[in-house]
Every structure is written in C-alpha cells, then in structure tokens.
Image (tube, rainbow, N blue to C red; front, top):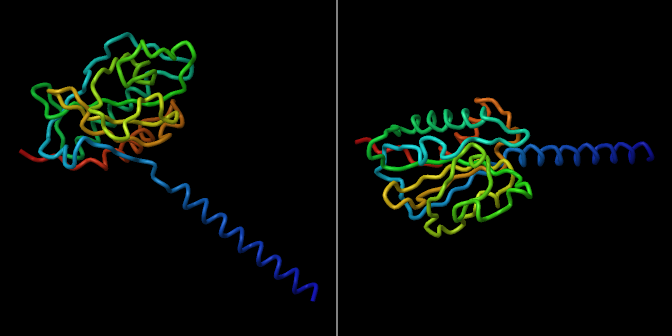
Length: 202
C-alpha cells in the first residue's frame, strides 16, 4: 500500500511538472507587439517614405552601456523591413515619415521635461542626437517614450504635411541587450513592421 502511494505521489509530481513547463513555454511565446493609429486604414495608399530626421539634430552622446552600433542596426533593419513590405525610400515628397525610438531608464540628471518636445523624453534616440517634436494627434493609448518599459522598441509613422503621428507600433522590452547584433535587432523590427499593411503599388 505504501509503495502504491509513493508511485501515485511520483506520478502526480511528474504531472504537475509537465503542466508547469508547458505553461512556461506558452508564456515565453507571447508576442508583446502592439499598435495604435489615428484612423482605420490610415496607412493605405502609401508607398514611399523618408526618415523624420534624416540626420541627427544634435551630437550623439551615449550613456554608459550604450553606443552607436544599435543605432546603425536599427536604421538598417527598419529600411530592410520596409522594403520587404514594398515601401520605397525617397527624399522627394514621401507619403510618410518614419522615426524609431527605444525606451531606457532615465537618469535623474536627464529627468527634466523642459529638455524635450511635448510628448517626448530621454531615450536611446535622444542619445543618438534626435530631437523629435511631432504631434501625437491625441491618439488613444499614446505614451511618451520614457513611460514604456526599458528596452521597448517603437516605430512611428508621421504625416509629412501636418507632422502629426499617424501610426505607432511597439514591442515591449524588445531590446534586452543594447549591444545586440543586427540579426537580433532585425527580428524585433520585423515583429512591428509585420503589423503594417503592404505598400500600395503605384
């Protein structure tokens, strides 16, 4: 009888372990990518883009643990993924402007709202020299970048005429290693760009 109880206890233990492990696998596969937009189909009939700021407005100044390699990987990955979706980069009358950002922990010395445009804050893009100042069109769910979890990758699409945000996609905590290589960065960018419609061919 004692042996039967031991066998039953062992079987129950193994069963519970199997449930726990399967739940861990399921949780690790959750996609934390989200989007907001000014209206449904707002990216329809668009096929060209340009960067919101083609070159940084200020000299890059990276804090400890950050450098320009991630910036280079992000620019390349975003351009590659937009091309995959059929969008063409241009410098003449683009249909939309794009900008990226990555949230970081804000040091006390940089926690000063007066340093940033309305709706923005200290971030990796700020370290890279960008000084974003486009409007958020009061999109439901809009947050300043410094209110996101550290490492959240953000891709914004802006109207080139009104300089208002049309669409935002982000992946929570996507950049866990700020020294990540191009392959890792590209896989996270792809998660966001996959949420965009394909470009409309002229």
